[in-house]
Length: 79
Image (cartoon, rainbow, N blue to C red):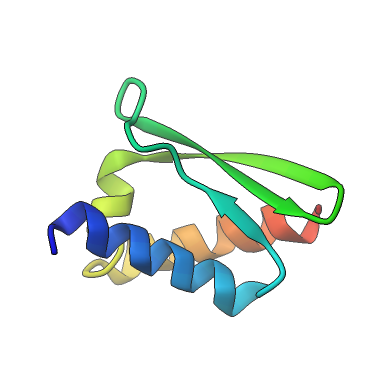
């Protein structure tokens, strides 16, 4: 498994830890090194922008994981 796949799995794990009812759509390729990720719960949808580097470093960097968790908690609480 490459570092992108590891990061993607960790990202999905963080979301499921926050709220298992959230559906996630992650594009297959970044635009300008950024991913526009869709979070959907029921009829509500929210988009978050995440850098490619943050996703790649998510499994190994505690600081990035904490920042990402906070960002996702805020986004999901608004769904």
